Length: 226
Image 1 (tube, rainbow, N blue to C red):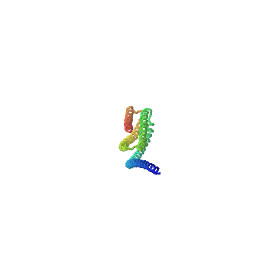
Image 2 (image 1 turned 90 degrees about the vertical axis):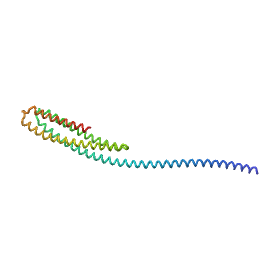
Image 3 (image 1 turned 60 degrees about the vertical axis):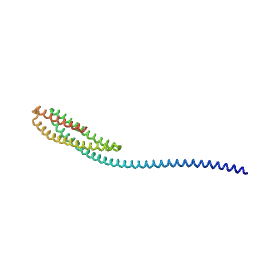
Image 4 (image 1 turned 135 degrees about the horizontal axis):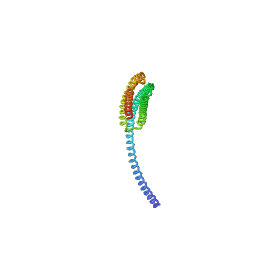
């Protein structure tokens, strides 16, 4: 009986040693988990700080976007004003063509030049419409921009300067067309009075004037396209 008790105590001691080893292993594992938990907490704090920085950047980009939208709306209004001016020029050009049709066969060369001016005016209108389409494309690109926002603002200011220059050019064309209407009407009346006695010198003079106007419109077209 005493031997059995000694064996039982020996088994209990072995079990206690195994249990103690298991406890030590568990304690080491818990310390490792605690270290990992601290690392995760540190990472979470870093992510939170980055998130706050991103939110601040997004707010700044949103403010810049609002400013660009305002600038683009202003450009759209200026484009509408230019389109109205161009339409008025087109109507005056039609009136000039009607006056030129009253000339005889020798005036056919002049009619051809005036029609050429009409076509170039239509080309100028097309260029202005093209600027409107480019502005729409610019709005689309602005929505996708981030870091390049400052460069785009500079480009928009440059477009405003070009729009002012284009308005000045269109004003000059308008004044030229008004002068053409006045002088062309006087020339037509004079030609009708003299009839067949009109000299080749008069036709050469009119051709020279139309050619000069043609060159001026061509120059303005190049400016608009540039």
